[in-house]
Image 1 (cartoon, rainbow, N blue to C red):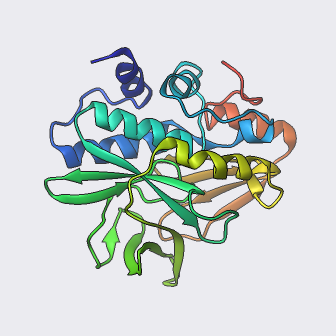
Image 2: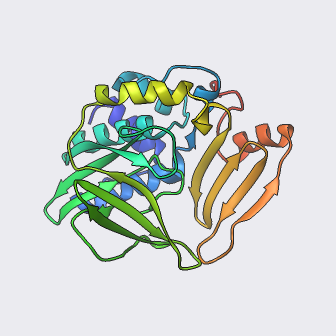
Length: 254
């Protein structure tokens, strides 16, 4: 096992690597959501996002930062492939978000049990990989999700606690290369239409639910309960980045 893989598994606190492919996929996604925050500090500070594996490992593993979907899922796909899974990157469009195709990156894994999608880089995403060619609702332990076909697109839908259904994002099953995301990534990192250029977003999965820091309020979303939001000051925000998300307030090293 190479040093990058060891560092990644250490960051995930994954002491044992499951031998079964589906269990491996589930463990890596679940631990990534818990241990590597989704955060946009670099975008807010005008720091370009890098796509190279060494650069991603330096940021996420050596400096123990978080990242956005490109960073989190590019490195997760690389790790899963090095661990022996048949994986590819897919591109998609976030519902209600800025930009078009390639605004989101996710991972496809071809397993003996079928094709599964995994995602460690979506702020309100599913906890368990979803079977791609399954039309029925799938339960991730918190919410129900459904993959519905619409032409060439797969629509990922979530059933909320109140019973309503919302589209999260849509994507195709065409394998992509990292370089294909660059133009859209650069647009989103600079466009005032994209909230990540002006609003701090940082989240991670905790045992009790999803914890999200958005500029001046902290949001906790627990299964079966209404979201709890409380305002925070700038001083509290810096402390929360360190204490709850394990991130240096200004995005540097610890």
